[in-house]
Length: 95
Length: 382
Ligand SMILES: Cc1cc2nc3c(=O)[nH]c(=O)nc-3n(C[C@H](O)[C@H](O)[C@H](O)COP(=O)(O)OP(=O)(O)OC[C@H]3O[C@@H](n4cnc5c(N)ncnc54)[C@H](O)[C@@H]3O)c2cc1C
Image (tube, each protein chain N blue to C red):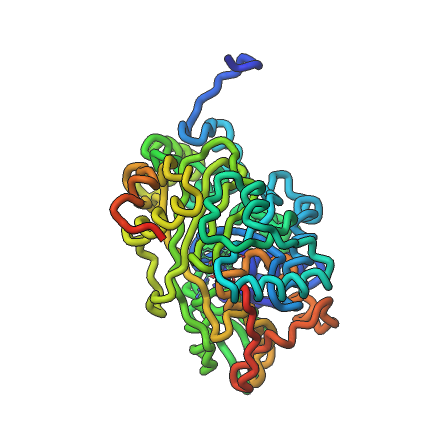
């Protein structure tokens, strides 16, 4: 349990980033989702932002007064599902 | 939005940001840095961010050695309240042919003269350094424990914040559409938000520098080359150094976050901008890395992406002025190893632009070397 008995809301579950951390960056003026992703790793985990992106976009909309649909999203990278290197290596010759 | 500046820097990668900071630190005023998208959107944010001193030429060894000393102090120097995640786990460079063994020994000779703490290691010693390394076919390796890796986003952010505090204006989502020159002098840049007049323009736009220079008739021998890279899920720390094989064209390291970052080079890449990811890369990368570092077969790939190397004919950067266009400076063509020399490059370019004596010679990186046929060849690059 949380030591200070504070409310902890996890925004990015893959990288364990709290709403507080996200808000602190936004307060510093980082209101670009691309930049937030790179500085905080939000959306860089295995789910690639499926959970956190909508939440963070809401925060950005609140902070900047822009409508949610006007907040540019980040690029989704392949592969769509985490695949083991061993599986990917199978079928091709080694070396 | 028309404006005037004393110095315009084009490109919000680690090089442009390092130059901006170093110029401002030296007292230059009214500097504007222009970035087409977000900061680190080019090669910097896509790179492996490995940092090594194990080169084969004295100049590159020195550039890298000084840069590593600067990385060690960077957070204090820049007053960064975060971490650039500099991990000095070393670089293990693998040798698979007699020719490589010979070259590596020559390189060690150069490195030792300059006080670089690198050494030759046998396959058995290499296995002690990286226990999960498959030493099949390995003739030996060189290792330098001071080499390492930083977080490229944080490193650039550290420069950006320090530069801003010193008064540098940073314009993101602003594209330079044209350079402006008159009577052999640069006069400014045209952007999609208006003209910025300036007697000094520093071009650090990566491979796009070629297209920008062309707008004032300068032909840069520089072309983009796609390089693909991937990252795995994070696991507990098992690999200290970056493992690199010129033979396989491969590099692979575990970053402090726990994930492995790895890439391979493909000499057959067409010379054009291509940001697409391919499944062929995934297969080839997986086959090579699981041969070299077998336990990695159990790791899941989380993401793959592509970036551009800005290649020159001798795979070395172009630094300095351009004869015939006063006030125009270049810091481009890093050919896949620009991140690791960014601290020193920023310092040297600032000194050069302000007309000071540079702390290290940079004339061998002069733009006119190609016309003179004096290429600067470095034996140890991927
Ligand atoms: C896959 C990969 C792996 C790599 N691994 C390593 C490594 O391990 N170690 C290492 O040292 N180096 C590595 N590199 C090389 C390294 O990334 C580069 O040398 C370095 O980042 C160059 O920085 P830069 O600032 O010159 O260029 P960039 O980071 O590309 O910055 C140039 C910026 O200019 C902007 N720009 C372009 N045109 C315009 C315009 N018209 N107007 C405004 N802005 C513009 C771009 O958007 C870009 O942000 C790697 C590169 C790649 C692609």
